[in-house]
Image 1 (cartoon, rainbow over the protein chains, first blue to last red):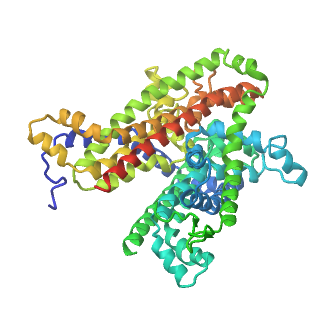
Image 2 (cartoon, helix red, strand yellow):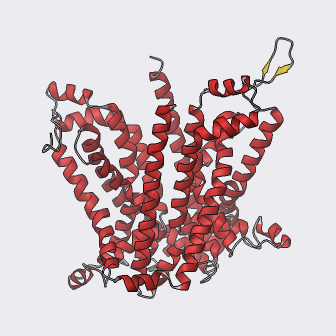
Image 3 (cartoon, each protein chain N blue to C red):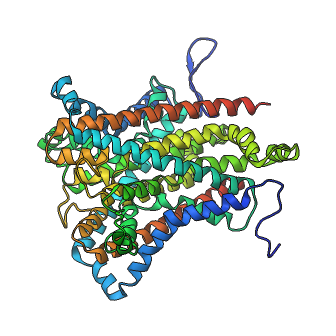
Length: 278
Length: 294
């Protein structure tokens, strides 16, 4: 058992399919990704540090992570509400609303980008009512946050829906018969139970937002130091043939993405354990 | 649907509120807030695409497509998808056969690696191919000597598209094949069927809806990808512009009607994708419910 990699089976095709899987995975994903890390590694720590701590890059990091965080938090709150309404209540058009939650997945990001400008620019559908209130949405960090909220919504709703469906009515009934108000039941029974799912959804939305490009570049205005996100900065560096800079930025972003991915896996492991324990 | 609480009338006809539900007022308030949020973030942007496209009437809308560059963009998008989709389909089926039907070491690691492209920013997905095949890339000079251009040409666009849509089909089919086990396949093999016969007559019919689901999602992303393709395309009008890139160019030229007209085709694709996706979800749910009580 210690030496054998595969357990015996009467089914054929293991070598062929696994071989092809590993080959295709290597050619498309693993080799190109390692190439970037090797190139980033050949830069040397000093140069790498210089690139990722320059003021323009730091400003871009701050905006990207800040706006992603706010967007994911907004989604955690409103996504919970949307998931709750879709699981618990019936209302006309519910199935259409349920399907529409996936729109940010299905819509090409460039289309979402120009559509968000049409809605939130100073002359846009909603923007023109925000303007007199002194609120500038498009071409400000607020616009970036709006786009990143849009893109992250399905992640929270889709991870929370099954968790809310799995809640057992008995637990809520018990809480109610023990004298808990509806609010107390929500606060002490329901939210703690679906918390792992909520955190997973939040993290997925955050991860997606950090790398997002298409839906942001139109509404952000792309002013260096002000409304420039990291993915755009990578493209700018590439267009200036600054391959070292682009590589350094890309590699650090990727390391951060992997750390987030790891967090998601730990969260999911925690949530399945949570379920078994309950 | 455990937990769905609706108001029930008592024998006397007065409404009785169950202890585990919310009052009608709270319920409609929550529905109202949710719908307002969704309207601001989903429905208005969707409506904006079509309204802006038809802002100057149907004539101007149709006129937008009377442009060779638009045709070239549509053709390129279809071509790229026609290459990327089958490749990822074959990979998805091979990976799920290996992972779903056999026990081997390192399986979990392999599943994680397959999901990797989802964690990578679209821009980085393009960047990695520039670093490999670009003029200053590892294989760039070698390719240039032989007159093969990958970056700022169609092959680069295809590669970037394959990368961003890489996990879609595999991740739908792998869990299902794992769940279904190998009993039916073992029976088929024992009864003398060949490996291919077993796959096409036993395994594939069992997973066909998951495959279709993955194909639909993969197709939508392949046609709509922007960031990754933008990095490798070079934006040569009529040559290396896909539909989303063409939308960007028109938009940056302040040709808004044309930009939204091309965008409306992509939005329509998104809507069709959502409808098909919901239909398949509904179908599998019905199937699931039928199997469960047995």
